[in-house]
Length: 127
Image 1 (cartoon, rainbow, N blue to C red):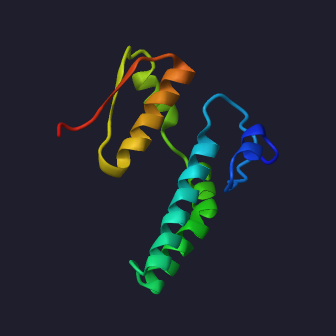
Image 2 (cartoon, helix red, strand yellow; image 1 turned 90 degrees about the vertical axis):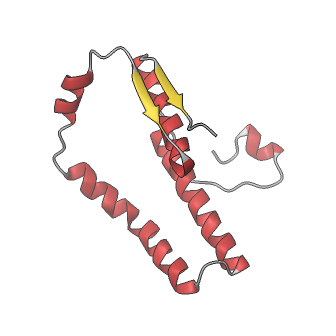
Image 3 (tube, one colour; image 1 turned 60 degrees about the vertical axis):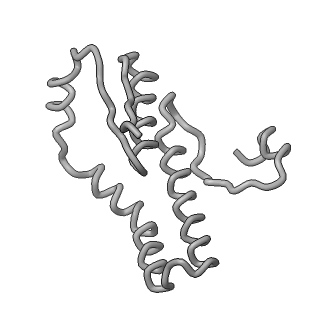
């Protein structure tokens, strides 16, 4: 948050402007941080010339379209209740993630533990 102790102590800050979280699971701020990291990576690709300008523009257009895509998803009918009914009494969940999917796996496991107090295990592929 702007003006917080940590922002006064560091040399530079990039604000996500995600706003305050309303619950324990910080989905909004996590998603905002991922989007920000993606945009920083695109800027680095532009500066270094590792991606062509038209590809960078197309990827930025996809990021710009995210709010509409999220709203469309949230307005659609999903079988959330059915999935919850199938799994609510399970004592344990396994999250598998590798490569760029690993941080999402770790975040999902953390959220389930924080909110539902259900044990989770995250695994990494053998090296």
